[in-house]
Image (cartoon, rainbow over all chains, first blue to last red; front, side, top):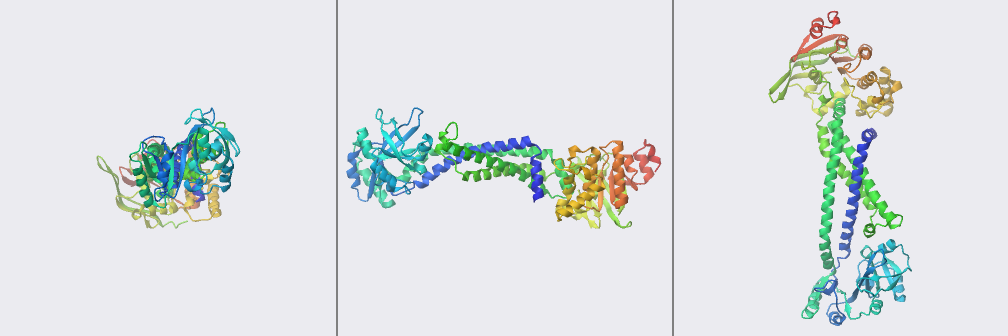
Length: 385
Length: 247
């Protein structure tokens, strides 16, 4: 086995430029694959985490972004089956002249964890801190990394949703969940006082005991306001996410399609490269057969070389992506890459890269290996008759 | 070393045909051949006469259309591909016109290559490789790659590789075809030493009369038929060569 691997390594070193270029091609593709997989994985995680059927989202039926009167609340909360509730007030804007966008959500702090996904492990001390600081915020970790902020940071938002009404805030804690990585939460009373808007709410969240109750409550609430000026639409959290995902799905499908085409293309590139190697070495392979090596050994050698090149390229591609992502998050790159902040690449993708690269190598070696299998021993002899 | 009377190679009424677009092509017709253990046999003949086909059959690289090929007491024409590959690795040593060494391996590693198929310790393998390299006088060049060796040295490595498994039969396909006159003589001397000193049975296919006359027995192929007779075959094959009548 050691001798076999040694022979394999020597064969790979035979044409270093070609081997390196093939591995580089795999490296680039796997880096792209890693990024695309991170996006689709993150979206997938969001679907899983937000799959609650017992949280209902109440919104205005037609307007986007949703907005309806606060005076609706008493009627809604009186519907049988509603166990808890919290409002959402949207506050959008930029953090600086560089244009770092941010989306803030003003809501109740007393039931923050119960009414929001991904907040289960939130430190109670942070909620206490929010009680003390009226302009306090719980900030998504990506924004913290992006702005290189620490807890205690004071900042103002140049509002795009409430033009001319720029609020001042202070970070009192960081949200660990990926769901809220680019958002911040702040107190509803600060929103209402700061913006002078106590009459409307963007979204209302309701908690019910189970899915069946949720369906009944949804129907009741929609019926209550079916003849009002602002009609309401109620859906489960998972349905809401599904609707969002449905829109994002097109983009994800395009990404997957493009990556699929690239993977196929890469298989062809590897196949061509390995095919060239086999064509150049047909006589050597014939010699090996003459010496008594079985055709399966020749095939294993060709497939092994392709897998090693593919896996090495894949490992380096995914490793490089992870490294860049980590350096980016730590602020060690000259320019921050926002996309990586939004979809941080995890170390597990290094293994994925290894496997994907190896698989590309394997698939790319099928035709060349078939050709190598068919090498005739006569190809080694002189043509003396 | 084998007993002189023992038959190592037996071909009985061997025919070989290839299918072509224009119909079957008869390459060998009713070939009968016996080679004794320790014999040095040359096979000559014009291009397309069937020499290489005969060599391939004897070495287990091809199968006859009709007839039996028996080597070392085993009917190799009845073996399947895996069996014959295994048999070949143990019983046949090959020497090629263009040496066919693997360029990425050193001389030592090239000679070692056939031994990788055997279940033996690294120390035993090393001993056999060094013995073979010593036999061809190339121990001092064992860490050189083929590209760093002259043609004659490469052919010596090729001969060492052929002998390293201590085969029953050595087949040589135009071993001097790519060498100058002086180097050819050295290689032929070496082959003769392999025959005389080690008692190896050698089947040599050649176009070179100087190589052909080194053999004990000379055979000539013509239009798929095998003819024997030292003087007549030499004269017919090499009519302008002065040594043809010297026998």
